[in-house]
Length: 64
Length: 147
Image (cartoon, rainbow over all chains, first blue to last red; front, side, top):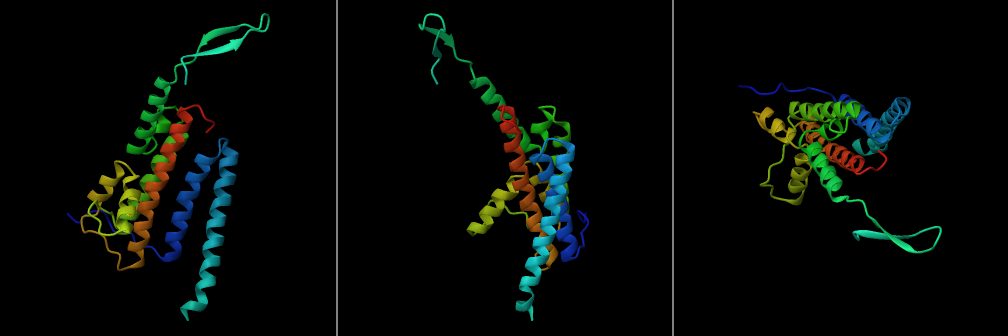
């Protein structure tokens, strides 16, 4: 038996998946009303992306 | 906490004894709900009829575990050599029964020689910590705290 299929994702795709799933959980645990949950999850997702991209660019000089 | 509490009456100012509510039963129930939420992600909320939260926690923790195992992340065991292995094991155990699911899915073992494997390790640890957060949330909700 070969086991669970291997998931191939790029760095950015892995980060997107992570941000999406964790933001959804934050939204549902952190807020009660559906509209508030959606807003909180969207805001959390956006911040995940912004911070990741900002840290990525901040590390860019060290990669050269 | 004392069994009885004294409260002065408005008319006479005398203290009368009123029985304090017995909270030990509800505390045990809350603890059982928290443990249930840890063992099966989302069950703590489902037991309190918070269907949406329960299902979404089950799906998110499950998705993180499945993706983490698919990326061939490291599922830590109790025989870790250093503190990071032990911390990783504690985080992975946070997924409750899903820890054994992750172990059973990774037939070929972890592969952290690639970035995906390293991401997978983080996905698995995040699943555990997220589930612990959800179980704590269910426990607090069962205790009557605003959740």
